Length: 550
Picture 1 (cartoon, rainbow, N blue to C red):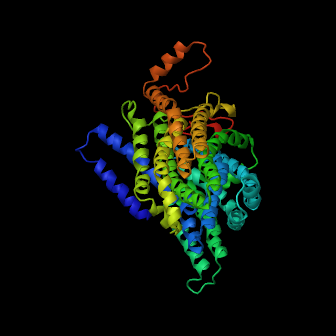
Picture 2 (tube, rainbow, N blue to C red; picture 1 turned 90 degrees about the horizontal axis):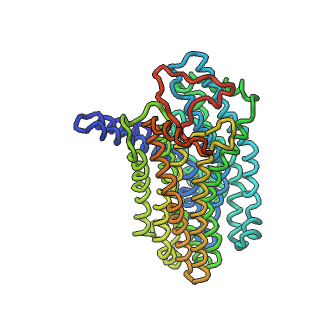
Picture 3 (spheres, rainbow, N blue to C red; picture 1 turned 180 degrees about the vertical axis):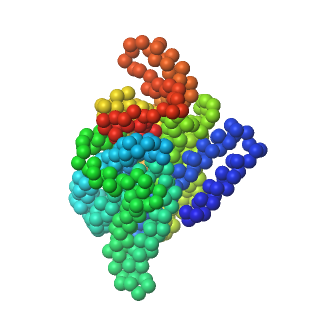
């Protein structure tokens, strides 16, 4: 897979090198290619999302696909998504801050290299310290999931019992999941996204093992759900071992000597861990917004009956599969825009104005439309994933499918708008951890307002206007519509403004002079950088370097 992917990239590069394209067209295509390559590499290599949202439901539904099991599997996947992504997302995005220290490593002298090594090591160390307590805290809701579903959310004993039978053993995989994500972000920051193309091979092997043990194939014992869980629990540990080798022992990373430097600096100043928690809270808040809407709608659908809840479980499973691609397109787009704003070397030779912002939005909207169109035309395809052929469930699914399909497409645009605000902030005071995400917090707040307003109107329509399952779909759709309305002007307009300042430093200088003593200062002030510029050494090497998009 990795060699085939590289051949495709080499062919695209050869096309971009031809003379029939103007320089401006080449810049645009190269910019779009970088977004697509990074997004595709991350999406293909994200074993957690692929396994959780697609392959586990397919495997479990072969064991049992009645309405209670379908509802339980929907609650299971949604709860895992909400809780785990909520807790490890700060860890994931914190790792991107190592990106500036990987840059120009070979051109640096030995003292500068050692400073860069220490900065990267501290990022990894902070993530490791954060992971230990969060791993234990994350496991608690899985262990007590039955009581949570019945006592807090009023689910039936049968559905809660089925969900608990999967969630309790699955908690054993949480340390492996955290370890894999701890190592993933520095690899992305170093630009080694093609490393992740090996991860699907690991996933395929473990799921093959799960299927063989679950159904007693190839002379192995038939263990049912226990056998299915064995491969699912083993996979994140194997993936973490592979990424550990790639980051610490592979030929490309040997020059960084990260294993030695992490060990030497493990007990240094731990203030960076506090910054990870505080700054990462903005990421956690956004994740909570994105996953809480389908989670609570799925819980509310229980009041409409088991058939409606089973149909909603399938529909929201499809929406989560779409979100897998949406979030990685958004991350890749924010990385590309952040490079144009914050880096000295840019893809575009001249000021791109709004084109550098429009390209990620067009890519997200185009790529994010493929699966929703397919689902809206033929919603029965989603039932193939769960092996559910109940006619009443299919009828309910057909009622909610248009709303969820449109919401899944709008979610791609909302993701990209929200992540654009990550690309153009620079902390006004790097010593104060609360100042780092002040602009991103505003985007998170705007999306929260939009989601809350849409969710509230939809729920009111469901239970007071008796719209039934269509009201659940309407609530999901309105949450995305109001979210985009709230984000559009702030995120799109702000990003274009920051790009203009990055390409025309005199704009930033003039704005700063005109602002006088006003409290709100220009967010980004970029001055021409000489070619022999070297970043000054700081007392804390983790704070050294420019932020890219984190």
